[in-house]
Length: 100
Image (cartoon, rainbow, N blue to C red; front, top):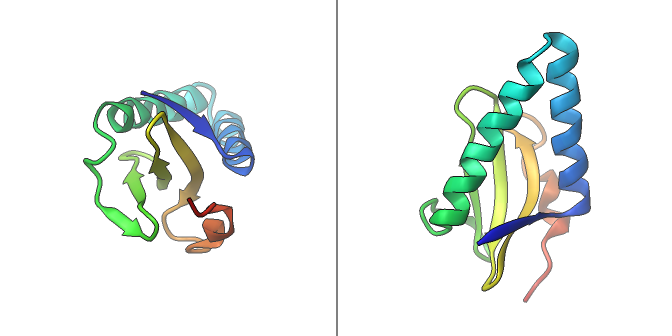
């Protein structure tokens, strides 16, 4: 299974890479590697992470960086709704959910 980004989530993800890279060269690459590792796991076993909210929204945490990948699995792909900081603005991304 592959994944797609909600437009706003793609921007968040790219902003995170740029932020960490500006702090320390190579740290953005470390963030990207961890993000891709989590997404690979999600794509392999999309139901591994528990449902966090309706309708079937799940979240997977990064270990080294304080972010959750908020996603929904469909029949054909994983839709990344947000790359949300674990302690800031909870559920700001809720407006991105499209009802099936």
